[in-house]
Structures are given as structure tokens and as C-alpha cells.
Length: 459
Image (cartoon, rainbow, N blue to C red; front, top):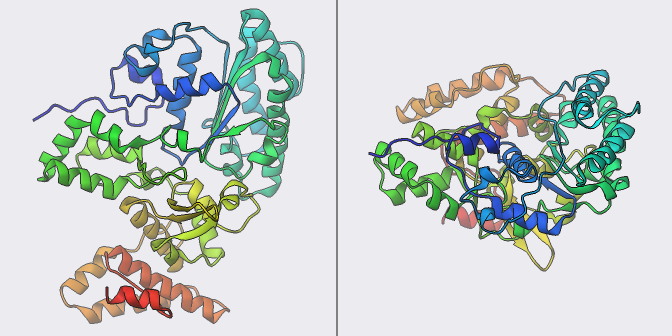
């Protein structure tokens, strides 16, 4: 049996992965391509998809850490390895509970760079940032590199407080506006986030920002492709197959079913695996559900419930225009674009003539995880309550205890909060039953009224 290798689960620092000799999927060819074009870039990807690691890779490259890139794709073409002044703003960390705390957090980030390049007495964030870019250029003789990780984290944290969102947006708009005004002192800009909904308003002054989120060329910039999986994880695949009594081919099929299926461009031929779930599965040698354990935004599931979203439509796919995905706004009550941006649905097909996408759940892990999150909402449970124990339903039916099964459902209906809108109450009850049977792995149709669905029943 092969010995387990060091898998960088949760490690988002390129330097640590390389120094510790952890398994690394080489993404440096993308670095070379981005640097050659040199535009300010913007990228959204779901959480746990490797955005922070890629940004850390860019940081090491621009800091001239040639030693860390030995043996990687970019080492064959890069010859200069200059050490640029790098400004790295990581909004994964910070206190975003109040405007005062947010200001203090951003000020602390700037103060660290002012200790290196000097403080010139400016009071507001925009002027301080502007002074830093000029000073760094003057002191090093090289233009600055600006890397921003999770630009939208403060906004997402405050999503239930519109006044706080507006305050954060105002601060960030003036702060990022510096990137356009000080273009002469900037070599490279790369900004990442989970959502696109505030890109236009926050970066409106940065009109040359190149959004590569739906670019076919960069669709595999984060995550793991099928080719990368089979090239980089042979020992892990063999170990997992042996542990679970599968052939190599059966193990690959199970991995694909559970963790593959993401597409981030019109090219739906290139499947992308969720890297976090894949590494966790290899580490545990088990086909578990890992992505949802990292947290599900409460506002998202609540948005689905409040907007009467047709969750059942995700089974076959929902058509949306490219404009819907690109121009989403925080004030919108439609959850589908947010479901896409946060990774709960992905592109399944593309209609070239009408420039529209068909969205659906990417894989089994996400599908069942999403249904488990929706189930307590339709049953009237709070987020802090225990989830419904679906296994009890399965055991009752397998044992032929139909009366117990029905009694359990009736008790849940009786405990669910009644609503003034009787139709909505009935729809919620229908949703609950539908979700129960889907989580049991059954094929379910509700209120079939057209030929397409009727055909599928007998198919």
C-alpha cells in the first residue's frame, strides 16, 4: 500500500506548501499568462476553491521568490524574478461588525505598510493608500503590485444591515478608486471575491478592470481539473480505491459523482473538482460531505425561502441570461445568481445563439448538502435546531413501518408554524415531503402538468 502524502488541507500559503513539500497542483502557467497581459484583474469563485492560494502564489512570484518555483511551469520561462513592492489586503480576517471596527481594521493593514514605506500624514484611507503607492515606487524603483483577497467579505458579513453595507461600500469605493488614479505607480492588480454583486458600484472608477470570472481561458485557474486529478493524485486514488474496495476506475467515478461538475465558462467540457472536498476525501479515505461543514450562509437559504424559489427546478436546470450573472445587485431578491456565485449551482450548458446559461447543482455532495439545509426551514425549524433525522424515515420505510412514517410526517406538519397564506403553507409542506424523498435518493415529481415530465415518469 502507498504511504499517505502531505495534503495541504486548509493551507492557503504558497510558500508553506512548497517549503513543507506538500502536494501542489501547478497553476503557475496562469500566473505567467496574467502577468504578460498586465491588466487589473477581477475573479470570483466559491469559497474553498483556492482563491487565497492562487493570490499567495502571485505574491511569492512578485516578491521574486525564485526558489519556491523550482520545477514548476513558470520556472522554465521566467528569467528576471524582480522583487516588487507588494500590497496584500486579506479581508478574510478583520472585524466587520461595526463601521468603527472596520475602519480600525483597514487602518491597521495600511499602518503595516507605512512602517516600511513611510507615513506622510494623510488621514483618510484613500490618501494614505495613494501615498504608499507613490512612496513604494520611489524607494524601490519598481511599480507596486496590489493583491486583494475576498474584497466582498465585509459586505457579506453585514448583509442584514443595509446601513452598514452602505458605509462599507462608501469606504471601499474611495479606497479602490486610488488604483485608477495612481496607475503610473502600479504594475499589477488582482482582486478576488465570492460574489460579483458589488463589483460595479465599488470599482466603478476602475473602468479598465478585467473580469475573468467567466473566461474560458481561466476557467481552471482555481479548483482541480480531471487531467490534474489523474496526473497529481495517483497514490491517493489508489489508496482510496483499496480502502473502499473499488477498482481505480470505480474510485474515479465516485470522486466525479461527489466532487466534480463545476464549470466557470461557456466551455462545459472542462469539469472542475472542488479542491477542498477532494483533499478531505483523500485524507479521510472516505466519500464524505465536507464542503458544507465549512459553513453555509444563513442569508442564502433564507433568501430561497422568502422568494418562493422553485428549488425543484435545480434538478433539470434553470436558464438565465449572461446579464443576470454579470450584473447581480445586493438589493435583488432573486437567489439564483447568488447560488451560482457561492457554488451551490454551476453552469451545466450554454446556448450560444441566445447567450444564456443553464444552471444546476454540480454534484451529489452539494445537492444533498443543500437539501439538508433547506429541510429544517420548510419544517419551521431554526438554524440552531437539530436537523431532521432523515435516516429515521428510511428505516421506517425499509422495515415496512408505513404508519410510523406517516405519523412522523404528520407530527412535523403539526409542529410547523401556520401561515396566513394557506397556499404558501401547502407549498411548504409539499417542499418538505419532496426534500425528504430526495434525501432518501428517490426520484420525485410534484404536480406533473406537462408532457416532458410525464414522459420522464415512464422513462
